[in-house]
Length: 581
Image (cartoon, rainbow, N blue to C red; front, side, top):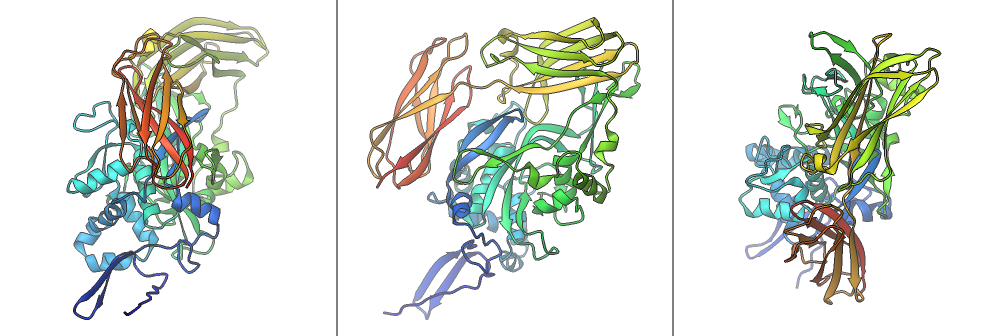
């Protein structure tokens, strides 16, 4: 009997290795990055963070809007059967490996190189990547991005179907799959949501938006502001940069703009974004604009002329990630940017060769308009939204108010009208405040909503005296009903367990074709459990099922639930379950 001990250097390339012993002996093994090893470039010195950013197989993705972040559960499943093989296959199928396998294998010692490969390979725009993006309501030949509950099914589908792209993904799906692959390869990773995320296509760090005389967006450029956008951060040192730029690095696999001829983005240090160091690798100007771009709004008149209007739209709000060791939201905006108006922010903008946002702000001419919503606002109900106008001048004001609403997707694509009001004569005495209500009727907005449950409200105020125009914009989220999960019995490893799952119908119409699906790492054996209801669920009634599964490992697990019907699609819920031995 011969016993061998293998001690690899911390900068050895990751991947499959083979040890041969003479003519008859052969041992195959996989070498990964080791964030527990002090010499490894992905070393992280906190056990608590390693449990969260490497070992945790489930997590929370934040969607919704910046005023109402909605936590969505996700099953990363990086340790499920077959997932590591799929992750290694992603590396092997990347074009750099296919062109020059030896050079690519050597490059795998460097997580900067591997992160860039993953950013390109999670989307399929230039290669045999994992996911095909689709940002319309046409999902023929695939499924809606909202139908995914985790990365396991996506990675298995890609691996078992000859590397054909899985259909379809949007930003949070691309980011979640990238997170699963990064953790599987040993790179600490977390998923991040940036609210009011700018998409700057011409690299001028300015988003120019045009509205018509009704306050509705007119699409004249590819520059957009997404309601939110998701990417990941990978943890590593950056020996290729000057000291001080180690730690979290932005890596974005959603195909938006090409970088060095390929649809990929990053990795770029968070500190480089915060300090306005736009010459650092990789793609600093694009990420900087996502969280810091100026927004200039112009009104395009019917005669073709344009006029800059006063608008209080900011980008890079409430940048969010899941907290370490809990399901609470952690706000990490301070890691990306200095506080608005601070000297440090001004210095960062100067360094970025960009005009100071403070110089771009116009003095308020004395009129203020904001949009407020009612407390009873929820999906299935009629409710009011309000344009609140305040006259802070010593003079009486006569104005025109155009107040409209349209369905909108999370990436800013506008849908159909959900309600509209045009008041030609709004009079305000000095110091007066007026609230103008716009009724949102379920019968009007129900058929126009996208899967994102978002409505864009826009209030345009025109001062007849000064001819100044003021625009207030707000995206509101119509919250889906809560899914309640009750565990029946004591959760034990390798013992059959039941969960009672309930959802109340909040709509004024019956729900038909109701279906619950459940998934959880080490809970459902890597499979998706499906239960359909045979009966119709009337308004106010409960849809209820009982689902059985057998946990295979002890510890804290997340049971992820998805509900679908003809009127309520992809309602997400979850329950943390502690499995005993």
